[in-house]
Length: 240
Image (cartoon, rainbow, N blue to C red; front, side, top):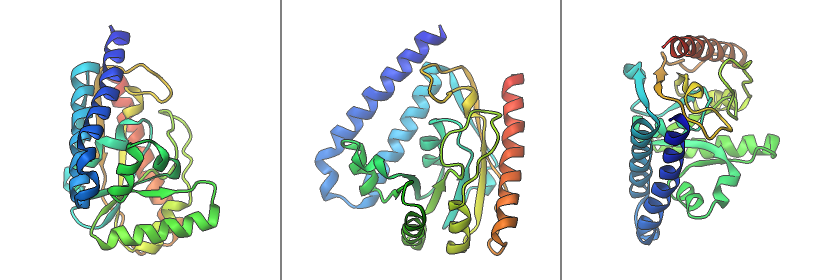
């Protein structure tokens, strides 16, 4: 049953994504950015709905009182593809830090450009970090929330943390609060797997970290907040 439901969801994911992107493409070049974001937001909501109805994995959002309405950095644990789109409908005007190669994906890549996503060249080292800071300033000036995954790539539940320096650079540069986010999504949508497991994916927003700390203290506080909460959610998910 899990295999069948997983196959149904995977098929629906790609079919719905293709239909929504292609159907709105004629309007792509003649509309403002907010129209493109509305397409992305509706697509994300649809995928969350399909994941619940076809794969049997619902979404529970905790800590809604900490969801930022104005400019902020949203630093999320990254266990699964799920949070890359599930966070979008929860924020007022989000943009996502993603790898630069996403720009080259047919149609989808054009939407990431149109909607002002922040593309990071992971091989560019110091130059890439400077470009990340500059692009992030531009989007923060528009009042947006920057979604970033501090570990860079997906980590399986329980894996040792691997936080990168990019998040500390943004914290120092942008002078806005950082809202940590914990998840247990890897239990239900494992990385590098076609299978999806039923249950409840929990996304928990945690108390914001105000600007002004030094980089070392900030990273320690961020990692402790995200890892402690994510481990708690993983234990809760396994118990359920």
